[in-house]
Length: 137
Image 1 (cartoon, one colour):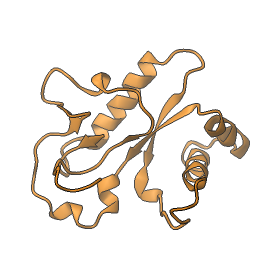
Image 2: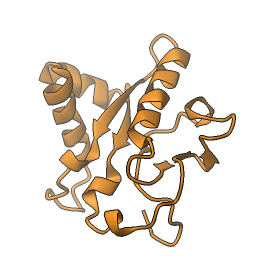
Image 3: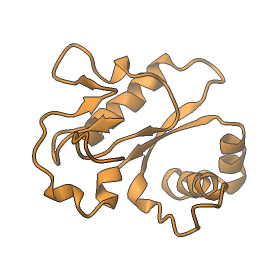
Image 4: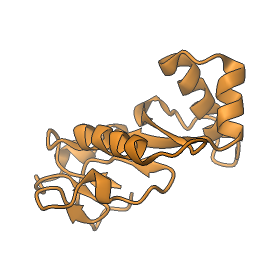
C-alpha cells in the first residue's frame, strides 16, 4: 500500500512500482497493471464474490483495449496483478486530512534508499491518499 498527501507522488510511485515489477517479471508470470480505483462503484453488492473479477476484466477491455475473451482468460488464469490507484479519491473526507509527508510504500518512506523496487509483489497493490494510521483503509 502506498500512502501520502495529495500531490506527494503516489500515482508516480505506483507507476514506478509497475515498471519495477515488469523489469523483474519472468516468462509466463503475471503482468502488473495500474488501474484507477475510482472506477469501481461497488454497487454490485458486497456479497458478490465475482464483482471485482468482472470489474477487472471490464477495465482491461476499456482501458487497455483487450478483447473480452483475452481479458477473461488473463484474469481467470491469474495472469494480472492489479495495482489499484486512487483509493483516496473514493473517500470524500480524505482531502480534509492534514499533510503527512512523502508517499510511503510498504511502510518505507520513498525519501530513503528504498522505493518501489523494495515492495513485495503481492496482488493486488493499492495506492491511497493518507498516512493517518488511525483511519481504517
